[in-house]
Image 1: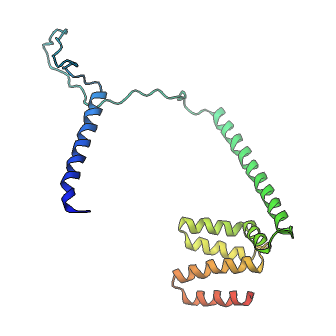
Image 2: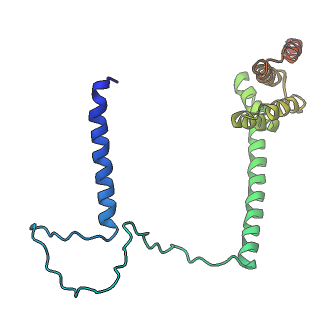
Image 3: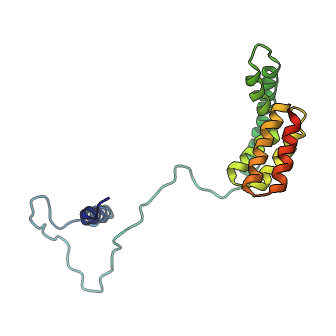
Length: 191
């Protein structure tokens, strides 16, 4: 961006900030003494002879919660625990259904071999956990999960090869030459 536009942008920014504060000030309850016609309204209140209290420029809006707030008693705790147990049982059921569906797809010979191998990769839980750890940035934990996924009974030579690719990349990033070459050697034995 050219330097000639900076003063213009700074001016526009200051004007917008001033308008924002003016809007907030008006919403906070401060009323203008000038009505729409530009004429001052007559004051109907009697002047007060004492120290004047300062009104806050910004007042916190009164918020009424949508749900009544009450302290947590034993009954809601138990209800929450039961609901959490139901949810965890439901999650286990979903996982079992998912595994059965994947196993059915792996055994389906009408599907392409590559497609079946993708389904096989999805069946290895440690590989999933390794991916999550890798996405979270925990490379050490990811490497441990990938090592565990090599021992999985559902692991085929193709899934082991893919897993070793992840591990080789992690060893390369860690600049661990010994581990890099040992993993390459292990990968070569799969072929």
